Length: 334
Ligand code: SAM
Ligand code: SF4
Ligand code: SF4
Image (cartoon, rainbow, N blue to C red):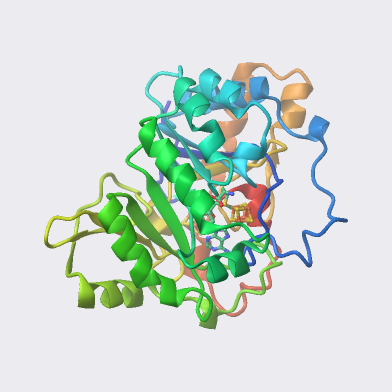
């Protein structure tokens, strides 16, 4: 049964965080000062088992979800992730994908593909080692991420999509080199406006490089034209190179809010359902499952939560919303 929220938006897209841990400390997501050695991550018994994730996934698919993206933290640090992929990839009518920082992708690409994963999105913020290392803050080299992408492409996890978060004063100089490089490679590069998720990254509006500025910069060197959406509710605005040499996307969540078509829900690693990236409160499905709820009861709870949904944070964003309580990106998943 297709669910509709109070703003007439269906539930189509589910992002499941499989861990709150990560092997990077990206300054815009898990800054070291907060996610240091003393940070308390979720214990193993607090996070959903693969069986619990599969159960929820099937219930959401029965409610109209057609796309599931596994995320985190870093999904590939969750042990035996390929086993979860093999459980989810057999669900009919479902587009299953994964967002990763790429660090462990070269090692795991074959197992992921073998388990039934169709494609991956890999995050990379610069081709310049100095800039990239300043952003991931764990001294991780660009080369290793590129190897991960190539391994994924070789085993057929393409077309590879690349996510680049752009932060003013940090990696603007990487926009053109990234565009040139991935156009050549045939990977789809998507520029993401830096967002005020969580509280730890010290976000300021001045740090955002508007998508329109990014498009203008690329267009001046490599002429672009807009493309139609692939489907309603698509997050990235698509552009193609006029000479036919590929496409790019921009995710303008700050400067051109797309809440009116937002059909996404998120489940945290410990099984809380969030109906907005900027939500304050999640709805606990882990305790419901562990308390013996039937599929029907869980299904009704999903319907209730979605039926009451009225989130549109990005449309309401202002200086006053920045300090509102929110959950961290590494917890809720991107
Ligand atoms: N660890 C994986 C990765 O980095 O791809 C998956 C989780 S990460 C939270 C998902 C996506 O969110 C990444 O592409 C990341 O760059 C993006 N992201 C994290 N913090 C962000 C922020 N403050 N604004 C915009 N995008 C952000
Ligand atoms: Fe880790 Fe991804 Fe967050 Fe970077 S963006 S710290 S890789 S979860
Ligand atoms: Fe969807 Fe919330 Fe983002 Fe708006 S702010 S697009 S409702 S996740």
